[in-house]
Length: 366
Image 1: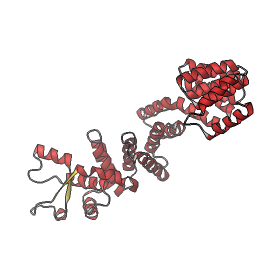
Image 2: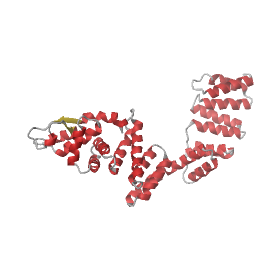
Image 3: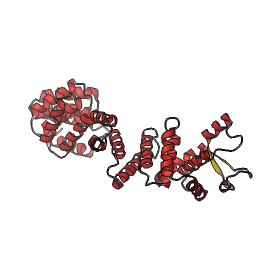
Image 4: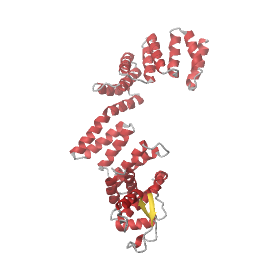
């Protein structure tokens, strides 16, 4: 949690400080600076509630918020003493308050849940609320803490499950996080665990809808895993099953890659063609499509596809390099020489391509 202290300190301006009058009945609050959440103070002044005595609950809430903003605050011990006197269960209190104000003031809800986590990290529901409110900040803040929001939320939710493997809300929220991260296999696993532990039909339907929304992406991710492990037959099975239900350009592309690695170039070519027909628009498609055509002895078709790709992605080093290779095979040495000279002017050439170009120039005396 310490890694996020620097982020939350920015909310210091959400608090103002007062000291109670000598005739106040709250003896334990005298002699220390007492925080008030600025929005609550504005509301109290507006409604006239602050004319006589400030509501103790407003001060208790602000103490909690203060400790969320700065866990090392000067009066932390004094605040904790007061909070423990008036609040029977701090984690339950912050959870209830956080839920109550989430719709009207999400920042206040987050700070209250964070305070509860700092003071009572064992409270599962409050810890879950803190994690649920924390990780979306990664998509709202582009500063140095962006990754920390998600990491901390994951840590908290997984810690809850270490202590209680049946806490379904943690599974559900982990599903939400991994879905947003694009890790659909993990998301699907967590959603399935949440579904298994849930009895309420409305909640079950919500989880089922989440599963439906990510299922296709999870299948794509599974296929990529198989491709990465060189298990191309399983990748083909996974992708053909998916494509029997829905037509996706990326699924056809990965199917083409799997077939290419199996040496089934005709099926690979058909898959790449389907991907293009579905308006796929990424450079790797043109490059891999051309490679399959070349390996299937369709060199001139391969050159045509590379030409189309270079119109969309001019000066692509890999496509230009493959174009050179194919032109040399079909005897277009002058064109290959011209492309080599141009390719050597590119700033983003890999050392591998540079070295290969030297070998080609020497071998073909270009």
